[in-house]
Length: 96
Image (tube, rainbow, N blue to C red):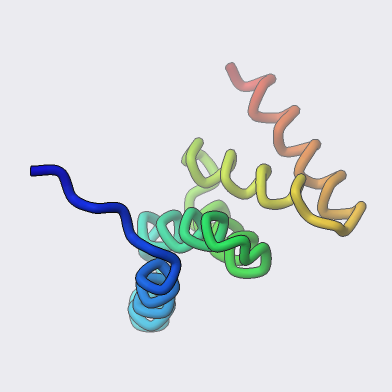
């Protein structure tokens, strides 16, 4: 049987639980990635950007962290974030 997708309220509770857990386990890259994805789904740019930034800082070679962080930055309304996101994407492309 296939699980039902989470609704917005359940996603918000998931994000809160992740933030709480990450306060005690700040080195958990996968947890930060999950919080970043959840923030993107909920349209919470601040949560997404902060979570992906933490994941990228902890593991700069992690492509999921780098791509998520770059995407969050390029979706920002701040031109400086957009510039940084574009620069990160260029570095990722040049790695391949």
